[in-house]
Image (tube, rainbow, N blue to C red; front, side, top):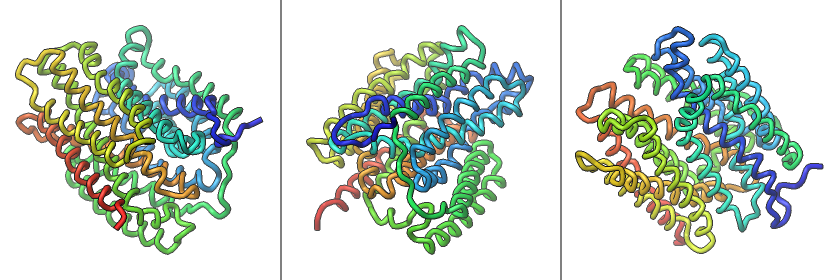
Length: 452
């Protein structure tokens, strides 16, 4: 018999495990394939530039479908969307592992991306349902830790697997994990109630197209295909206006009720989330080039040095979740952003020949600030809406994270492609600027929340 995920003050540990396992593999697969691209390119006899489609297919599928699937969770129930996503993730991972051509692998990566979007679009909503209100901050802190560590650990885990097995095992390993997660979910997660009323299919299609156009714009900029990027951007803006008018007339039946954005707390927190994840990716993508190409560290050493970020995030995100009971979320988040800003500046100002300790404590400072900020920020996002719009807030949170990650990694690629004098330092300085801007937005949020 299914247990109620939100009964009283009890904590459903099995439900937490189900959501956590699926969240981890969905985040891992956003980065785990990157390391294997040269190996896959060689096996399929394709160029390395063409092999990047394997990564793009997953990212673009997630960004295009995240919000429509979050809204679908509101109509059919978040548990049903989650379970369907986990099942399809297992099947598509098996398809990826058995692929014998680039085309076959790309198709299954697209399906895998849709499946991951189903998982990630409702995971924050499920956490809100699973955890009692008194422990919600801690639950969101644990989720931040899992998301950050899984995304950061992808390349390291991929290297370890490739050292003893073929690239196919990068995807095969997902199958038993997803199967266990699905089994636990079916037994221990209750079927969340669905709201009456039709699903906004038109809105979902428009959002899907907006996601694709945004991805095309970023793709065009990073590949220096200016006309393609500008054309995609123009269509994106026109379609965004169409979507706004479409949703404005539908009011409560809208895919994304525009009324939720009347809350400055929600709107500003989403902006800060995107900026912080862009900062993280600006560091994550540029620092490996610095460590490997400039300092001539080997791949293993590079991975170990960068592990300081997720380890620090792991500690401070859980700490922040506990601090939410005693202190103002805005103060905790601002402190985290301050640490992130200082860490990015100090990393950009590394000595000419830094030692390992010089690198580790700076990277750890960034990770500590990132974790300290994310937990209270996510808490404010998820508690700024009523229960009716929990799945919408969860989808918006996932979208802000993904958009920030795409923008951050795209900016690093752009800096390298336009041949700036020091693309790595430029990336780190840009990240520092983003975190400073986020800190300014944090102050605006704090002022807006104060009673007048």
